[in-house]
Image 1 (cartoon, helix red, strand yellow):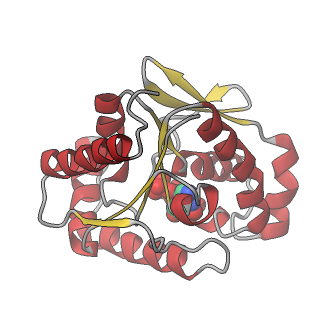
Image 2 (cartoon, protein in one colour):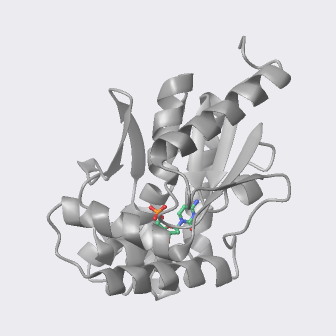
Length: 229
Ligand code: DC
């Protein structure tokens, strides 16, 4: 039986960086489900489709084969055989992913793929609805969050480092807009599962937050007797 750890939380809370480092430390596969929503947005935008039009986006789905491949321990996202891992990290795709993720047909489409990966591997899966919808029976659920200002500061630093010239206020506006979209959509909105452990990283640096998550995972695998599987 595989061990499943669910990490949910808003954009920019440090989920992917922390989950990736924790997965490496405990020897699990890290699955970034946001990348799957981004890959749908990428395909729709590349075809000139309006990402907010549910019917138009749904009609594209039969033509999209998203795949996650784990190369040297890191996740790569493919759409119809093309590695789009870097291309899906732009502000335009971020907003597009938020829009397509509100479409029920898109969520259904990606649900089976996520379930399959979790049933076949020991995973740390991050997203918005992993603990509430995708893996309701996960061995451990963590809700990772931080204040909107702190998350915007981190995202701004990340984009600046990549050489993208964006001003802080527009990054903060994007964070607030995505928070609103993600938590107010009708289907699978972002919310903390009742049995999730809340982890607020506003005052923690990455190292401290990662340590905390690794400790929670080790505690879980030990308590549940999963550490020898
Ligand atoms: O984590 P991220 O920023 O890469 O996610 C991109 C978008 O996808 C985000 O706006 C919310 C959505 N998403 C979702 O609805 N459910 C998930 N499990 C993961 C991401």
